[in-house]
Length: 340
Image: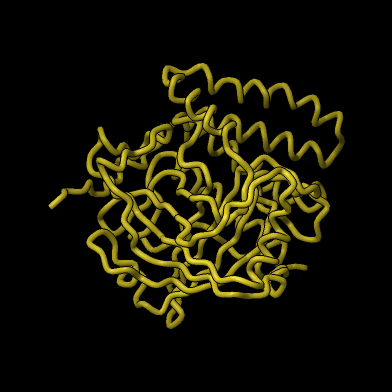
């Protein structure tokens, strides 16, 4: 039987310098969310990332018997529901149809019989562009400053743009440059297609009990893939869901050791010959009217994975940065929107 790597708190450790940068970023995140409604010209405060929503979809999660992860046991039963949110990662809510085809699909799997749930933010790109927590935080700090400045005036924002661009360029001054360039080329090779037909992946790892692994959401249907820059994702999703049922496989890829499946190397895809993806559940999205979910109650739903039980928490150094970012962003957004 294959041996799997077990969770260790050492996988999550940040340096003092990284903690200092994170402390600098958190007040900026709060301020960015506070001004988000005015910057994005919306009636509600938006997320500080994945602000643009294409729609919410509801469904059922059917556990699949396997030797990897028992989702039903972890969530206290097999009567499980799903809420999904398709989104774009930009913190601006753009009004046009076209956007670069990087998308998110956030899942909330919940027990219908008792208050237990798990949340998994996924993206249609399986790797990240840096392993440097410090560089990521410096970019995030400057992006938040740029966003906040837009609330005041465009000239002030323009003055902050060069430092944001320079921090982005710093990604390429790295000893792991070959891996970064490889992933950037893959990033620019993504084609625009209908949202549910992408594979969606976790950014980094999650705990599954004592084990650690990545997540993949894979379409389980034969549907002609619609492609093209003229796709209106929101309208296409709404129209398709009103006439069809969708089936998706919820899969995990478990870590086996530090060299073949490194938890903190987000530049690297784990090879399936070392650890295959295992289907641990099926998601059924029945035919439905998505316009029922176009309200603030749904937009205010949290998909914060750090609200999961300990056995389903995110793992890794970059994930621990996201923990505090999520906490501040969600708390600020929900507090503001509850007043409306």
